Length: 82
Image (cartoon, rainbow, N blue to C red; front, side, top):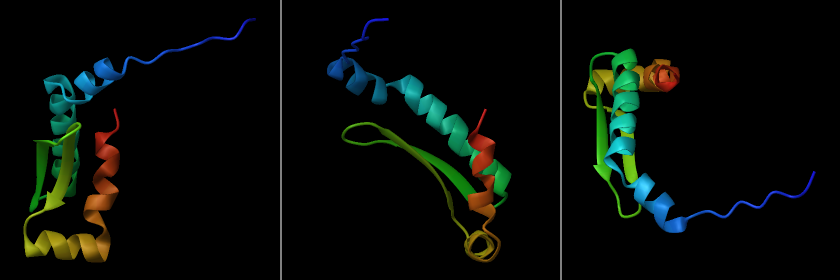
């Protein structure tokens, strides 16, 4: 079997990482994590310079305390896996 050569299209990859579809996927996964973590957690998606970013974070002191003591947000990350 011969060697396989793969050439990446840099412009296409950049376009993909900035696309609305990637943003929608990140939003869905971040919402799944925030939902699994419970009240006091929110999902956020924003357009960065090179790509779309997403996160789930605490917004209340109770949720922050729960994360610090019980790692509720950290444990909820499996909710983003399909």
